[in-house]
Length: 198
Length: 198
DNA sequence: TTATAACACAACATGGTGTTCAGTGCACCG
DNA sequence: CGGTGCACTGAACACCATGTTGTGTTATAA
Image (cartoon, rainbow over all chains, first blue to last red; front, top):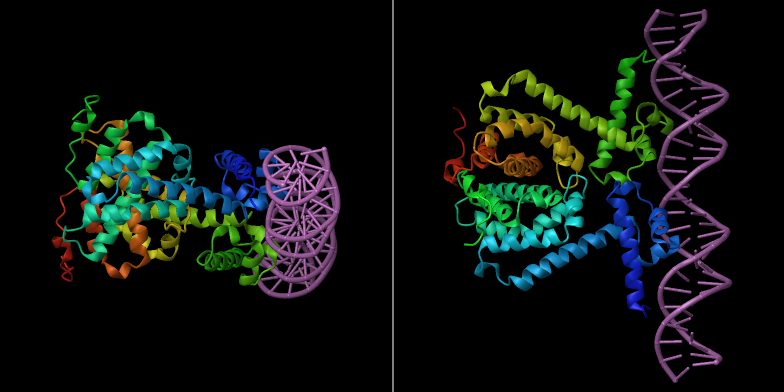
């Protein structure tokens, strides 16, 4: 089986594209296999050659995104300790910006809470180390504060992705770091635009 | 119609209880009307006398919770400005604790993102005023930071509700306020247990 | 006592699901 | 060329949930 990988990949991609154009419009539970294949121009049976059901299709999209995020992070930033948190978060945000079409939906309130949970799990180790470790928190305190930062970051990222044009990447990452460090509010360092060079 | 209000209310309650015991176990999309009525001991048609479908049932539960939350807040804390943020957040957390069985599920990663969004909208005005206003933030900055705090608060609350026994209410509210004020980490003031009396 | 609200029971058309299987067209390989 | 096999079609299948409807039964409120 799979003698023509490029053809099958194209078919899967077509189905995925069709699904996504529907998912961007309406909730998952109202999307049928019939609709997807009709939109993509395939027979309904073809869908089942590649996916078990609609949820499986969404899962595969999510898996790919998360895998790529993790892969890129490990590839370009091997050993987080050697880099600073700002560089790390910059890269996280950049990657999300590349796939903004997906992330903006999946992380939003119309999205999939399970995807958001997995996204947060991916960032948890870094935040734990940089934001919480060595600050003398109880285990319970750490866990709760970690959740605060993870959920907050995810929520703010989702909102920024809705319209990234309103604030540039450097300023946005600055906001993130400000929340991480618990710095006293000094927003005017952010208000000045331009002059991003160190 | 509705000549016997107490009976119909009991029936609706029975259906809701049956639904909830299913929702606590498995995702919404795998819960059928047949299951609910079978568990509650009614005919399937009875369900449609009171609810349009399963989503309608969930929505009614959510509406009731949010309405009660808003009602209690307005009733006991009329005019937020006259009270301090600590009192307000204490009360918010208390109310959530009362309905922990619902909130812990609805706000969790297994829950309903739309409910979480509505919950956040309810708290948005207070946070905006107390945490962000008058600090010189840009509109865009305010909106993003507000989302950070709302999402963070909601996430941390959801996690705390999973097992409220691990940290008492005062300490938990202390954590929340710490995040709001962006105070420099001084966790040891929280670590001391007991001595909750003022 | 009687009207009727609350609910049961059963049947219905509709539509999605997941599977199967014979058939078609195209690509690649000898 | 011509054969082999893969990707896909088309149609049918049984199954199940949906939402609705019509006809009952029962208990209670007036």
